[in-house]
Image (cartoon, rainbow, N blue to C red; front, side, top):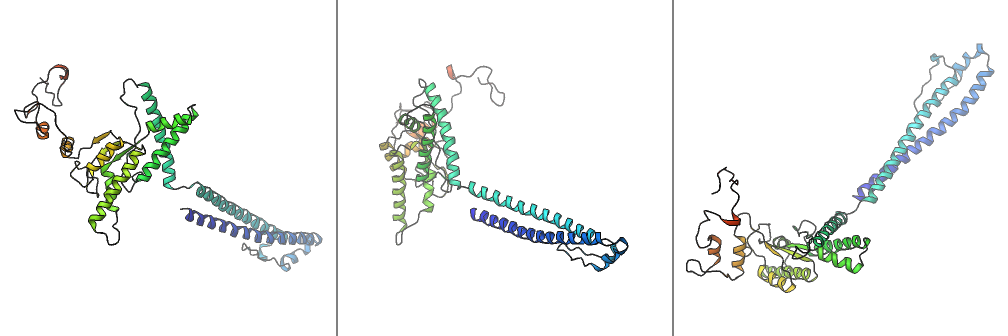
Length: 365
């Protein structure tokens, strides 16, 4: 982009120089005509009126650069013709000057534009960090105001996205969070907080959301080393996957985790365990790093994603027996307090008012 603008600057300056040269050429011609005019005016004054017709026929008028042609049948005095030439050249010089000034202005405008240009990453990062920091300030104010009602402070957690988007690579996530924290700390220090207290507040209220499925899509860009078989390349990717996320967790970057699965090529939102995300090992490492904030994101057509995830991870069920049998996730998923049907009446605090109706206008009894 800067190269293209630089070329337009050179073109504008070249055009301005061309017009400036033409201006000088016309100026020299006008100066010469003005000297000629002085001589001709003296000659006309010293010539008797009855003899001036000889001046019209015998004094040659030099053709100017603007293409003026004199005809003796016009019956104009040489001085009059020269004045017209001078007037035409002066107008032409004014137009050339305006054109040159216009190209100079274009060159200056292009230079200013070139100096304002920055990379999408730098501009986007600056705007994103400002937005995240401002949102985190609001989260801090709300948390302090409602700390008696909250189990933990509210924090802002931008989510890692797809590999083709900024903020998906671990280095980018780290950079985004750290710079957002620095921006929030600046805002707090302007309000009288110490640097240490400001940074601690920023770490509390700005963290990252990691989506296991989004991060797994780096798999499709992973390249095997020369002579490396696909299985070893896959294991090396999984090690990179786990190591990088563990680093982010230990650095205090990760606050919230979305558990989704896929095969590394599309954001399929499979139930954890159905794809090739190293989910169990990931959760073990997150547990060791102290990460506790998880949510299982259900797939587009699986309302039982949470139960199936718990079953996949071997989570125990603590429940009364259902119809004399030991409880399992299938019973929990399909059953309703001991029978496979929804309740046909609701009592107590769960019951809506008598005025409440279904969308079909049928009252709920």
